[in-house]
Length: 353
Image (cartoon, rainbow, N blue to C red; front, side, top):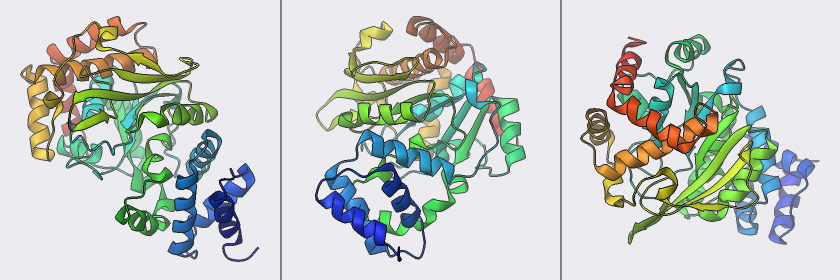
């Protein structure tokens, strides 16, 4: 088969709204990660796949193959009890880095957190930016990554260091972004943590994707997790890739928490009242560091604090640290108010100095 025969054949199939076999899709993935294949061929394929709509089976193959292509961080001994908390981004809400701060909270309680992410794409401050902001370097050394896990119960796998194949996709992603075309690569990042932690709390920007992504993660052996989308009571934002108390949350459980269909969870599920979405607003790195300090000092906007507690409580429940959301809320509140999280951040900021 010459240069990009499979890519061309599969692009034509996709244009006819045909789903791809696992074998054909694997061949296409190897071609789109080949630097010798033209940007146009890759762009045509990804555009056709997006316009057809990815099936959960196709999404599962992308997850499986890109995990295979990633660099192994050698954290197999941590992965069975670890959790990753992240969102797809793309909700354009410009909110505070909720999942990143919650990751700090969860790690401060002794739960292993293997977070995987990148710099900001759709917001002013991404997870990598806030992590650097507290003084943790974006390390690629495997011994340093292990030391971070051993001493902090936390490490951050900076995506560019662990997914070399992505550099051959960057030009086509840029070309598609210029046309405002959303493809599978806008969603893939949070699902391909190279350490494959057994537990996951994943937020998505589009509620139509919740079940599809959840089932694709189930096919890739996530032990326990939920995929969520927060519908919010705000005229400028339809929803966010987080759980919030600012409206109803759509939730799909996977693995040990498997649900047959997506469920709607109101703030009352966590015994909290509905809040104000503007409280969740974030900004650039310096602004978000100030907001983080407000959370640590007990002076943050009420709905932001409640949203943070809800996400931490849910993470503890997903991972098994707590047996209920109520127990998770109590633990999260105590961690934030008794200084545990603040002490953890101080320790993290000094670890690699």
